[in-house]
Amino acid sequence: MSIPNTLKTKYTFDDRGHAVAILSHDFPQEFKDICDCLNAFVLRKSQIMARGGAVSDISKGIDDFLHKREWAQKAFNIEIRVDGKPIPIPTHHIDNFKNDIGIEVEWNNKTEFYDRDLNNFRLLHELRVLSVGVIITRRSELQGLFNNLKIGKKYGASTTHWNKLIPKVDGGGAGGCPLLLVGIGLACYDSNT
Image 1 (cartoon, rainbow, N blue to C red):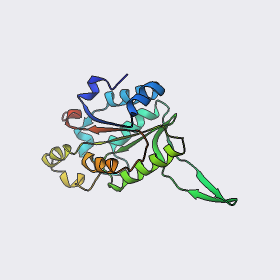
Image 2: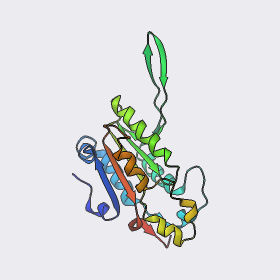
Image 3: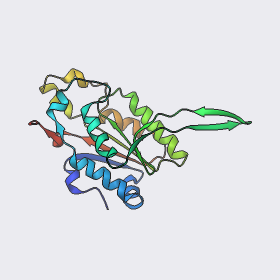
Image 4: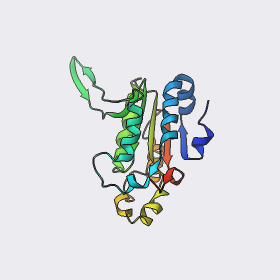
């Protein structure tokens, strides 16, 4: 099973380390949840225009869909012992986690959040608690739309978008962790809602 063609016309996908094969073969329910979530998603003008806050309505909508399917925010308590002395290894929580699959939604954060997410995926994969990491982010092409809507400064070049993510992935930020990268672009946009 691969990514449905209906989603390929709506999103940009980048499959690293055979993530789609792992998801579809070993985690078919989680893969279905991801596809269903993407299929249901609409990038609404009203959400783009909303004032900023801790979590945007866009990210919250994706998270809420997944939480209804028993995905949950997950933190990991990791430590190693050296001569009996525990040494904690801090990790950041994953926005959405279910059965060894982690999904991060990076809509409009500082680009350092990509470093955090990829490093987290790398570490958790090395510890065999994460099989595939998924990052859902916006395509850089949306900047033109934001500029036309007169909110381009809200979504600046130094915030999370596809052209900032790919070099970090290409540079090995996730180590050997299989990744599915999903880009939200103009094909998802609805100017009437």
